[in-house]
Image (cartoon, rainbow, N blue to C red; front, side):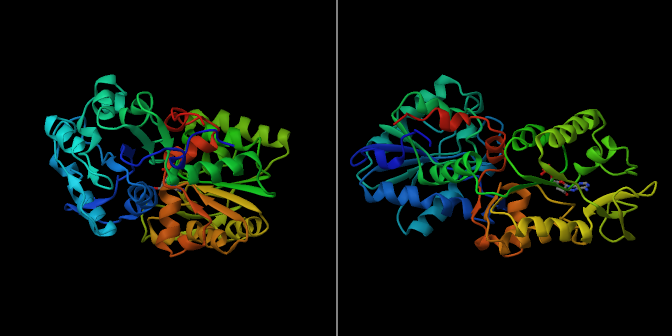
Length: 396
Ligand code: AMP
């Protein structure tokens, strides 16, 4: 089990507690279009305020390229947070995130006051984890809480840098993510099934390699299937292909055979002549793609097979869509897998990103045991890597 301090291990009354949140919310025309990430951070914030902490929140938003850019200001987040908590949120906009004015406000905070800093990526040092900005941030607080899982796989000033300068702990959100995913990786209830999809094999090589030593069955779908099919000698028409990964795909198939892991690829496919929704569509066997056609979704027979595997599983993890689910005619595989996960008795985990969006779009999110708030971070977790944002936290 993880031997890191959690927020409950800190004494916070009267202390200035610096908290890294993930407020990287989707925005349109200056309005927040989905506040799920803000809501996910409320348990830690409310706990600290209840305990009399003087809470100073920080986050990044978008990619402002290391300089102040009003389009990426956290001002709308301060407003939304204030509505959700029904209390004042002190927001001091500063192009440099920390300046004398910000320091003064931070020093003047009373117990249970709440403050939000400007977007940490307004500073060029942030993503390089340079000490100047880590020191600026750390100077504001007495201790640090990391509650941003979405950036835990990155070493930045606002997570790793400050951890090395202040006593630190994990917030409730990060702790929940790490506990649930950690226990699944260490001692899963079996059968343990992983479903991997998405565009590229290259993004998921490490994950596949690690999972082949842990799962009972690996279901593969999406664009990455075709690099495997090529390795098996199938004609794949104009389907997505990573030519330079064909050999590796062959090695992974071999490894699955050696380790006794059942690795399933689509047996049939929904194919089209063009990459668009409204076009002629056919369903063909996976080894029968005609020249000039491309596979854009798993077929109905594959979906049925995958749904059966999911139904019989005790633990399922899923990352990556089964097809081009953004187009309705090629979304059945992805939504069908989401449905199977939702109705399964298994412990079900979705690793953020597109698969999480698919579960949410189909109103099934509530029926999934855990939807991770970090796509990239959860992938690295499944890869068996140590996440720097977590490793940097003080040990118990
Ligand atoms: P990733 O970011 O690697 O998880 O990939 C997600 C993207 O993969 C989505 O935008 C899908 O539209 C795309 N995708 C899934 N299946 C296919 C496919 N068969 N052909 C092309 N793109 C695909």
